[in-house]
Length: 328
Picture 1 (cartoon, rainbow, N blue to C red):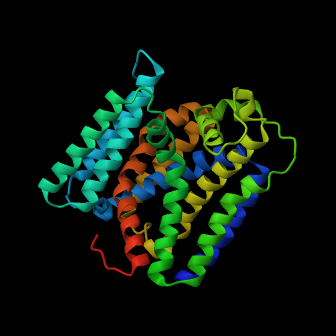
Picture 2: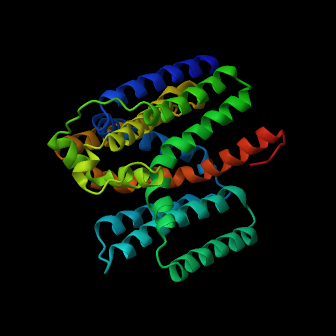
């Protein structure tokens, strides 16, 4: 299948995801996250392994893996004196994964890596010791980078790079449709009565801070109570955006089988992937929150392991826009 057909399929998938998100703002996200998400994590990790994680050294991925495991223990098996300490520690781990991944993707010489990583650690120390309320740091690295930035910003960047590399009109058109779909949720807010079920409220409790913080950043009506997450028109608009971003992020991955050939793996690996996916589905069906906990480390692992590719994509996009060749 040529790239033009893939672009047209993806435009259709964007419109499909956008339409469903309007009617099922929370339900679509919960379905996509539980059903499509684990299969995406597993197949992408296998593909990244084949591509050596887009890193300059062979075992860089092990460090990112350790950081992903540490996120799990921070989230479910740690005790802090204050919520601020917990949020700062979790945000710091994501920050370290992101900055380490930049060094892994860009520098082969250990001296360059050492200087960059040391600078990153010093900056983190300054933020922790000298900034009394590092809310922006926590929002960026603790909340948005592993969620909306991962599924919306980085996906948009991949679309842009593909369009520029192939000099594709349909690729640029797909990027425009992608952005229009995302913006539409905040321009067209239908005045409909939405009633979230108890299942939705219980299952979405691990994500509601996205609605609260994004509403604050965008200057929308402040969400002061948890019930407002499921009743405020602006919070529902945010839920639609989140549902669209996640659903299309997953569908985009599965639609590009013929382009990046992520499915071409040994049968044994594919069998293991499918077995783990089925176990994940069963776990989510029994109890959504238990599923979240069981897949927590895996979800962060795929985000962290993708960071080197994300960094390279930004550099590649810049070089293509400027008409310069940059070796990545």
